[in-house]
Image 1 (cartoon, rainbow, N blue to C red):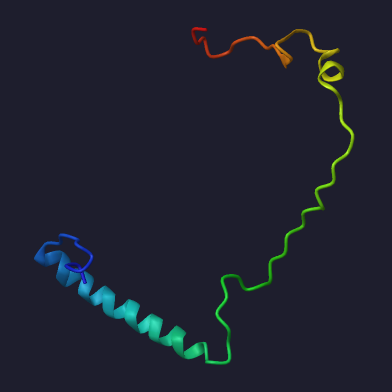
Image 2: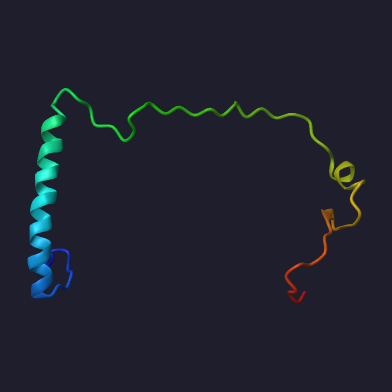
Amino acid sequence: MAALARISLAEAELDHLASQLDTIVEAVRIVSEAAGGDVPATSHPIPLVNVFRPDVVHPSLTVEEALQSAPASEDDQFKVPRILGEEP
């Protein structure tokens, strides 16, 4: 398997991992027995549904209305102090 996955392992590592692989294969066999052919494959134990509301367009503020209470604006955008010290 290590050769197929192109994983380089030393001989001692192979011996150690071989016994663990047997344990993993046995666990998969046991789980496979529990899920019979009448049990559908699932990614979650309970059904998932979205809880989003429908996207409905509502009237909103104009640019001027949004910026009228701003302490500073420039080019129809909020103007805020630079915090990262970047050069303009």
